[in-house]
Amino acid sequence: MIHKIRLLAAIILPLLLFSINCSDTGSKTYPTYPYGGDYNYDGNNNNDNNDYIVDYSGEWEGFMWEDFRSDYISLGKKKIAMRVNYRDSTWTSSGWSDWYKIDVLIDGRPAASTVEEIHSGGYIHLQSNDNSIDLDMQGYFRKSNADGNFMLDWDEKFKDQWDGETVKYQVWISGTYDLGHVKGAQWAPAWELFDTYGDGIWDLSDEIWEAATLEGLAHLDTLTVEDIRTPD
Image (tube, rainbow, N blue to C red):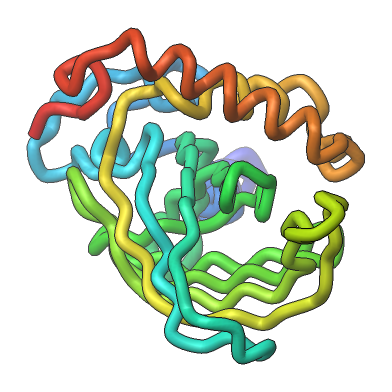
């Protein structure tokens, strides 16, 4: 009888251990990049082949060049600022995916605040629909620049040239964008609003965002180019 129990245990135990290991394949036991003990990126870049989390994270600034507007107003360009912070990594049968919290300002106004994947080759497809603002951006991130295509559907705001009143109307815009990797400077007060109010940012007035932009510009005037640009 004892012999049969030992034989049965010898058969069942390996199967049990195999089952436990299989059930854990979705956990983050084997992070692919340098993380701290809680699996958050710890700021160290010890692997030259896996340093793109560092490359993509940080602040970006540039322009969105319009090539189509649904209102047929003359085409122009918009100032765009983006903050990218590494958030998490997940495992699927296709491999590891790295997710980033991305906040977007267009002409000093919040346009998106979402979590998106940036692939190892730098490809991103950001889709956001917040506060009736539809933003779709596709393109590639590199160490010091990012570019691609965008589609934006939102209420365009401008001041009437006669009475100075702010008016708005819905417009659909498409075009291209080009961003450079910068150090935090001009948009720091705006990012503080994102951090402080969370989903409440959409309820803040235009005057608050304008004040944040002006505060950032005032700070920017005190800096040199070396203070602002991220070295290659």
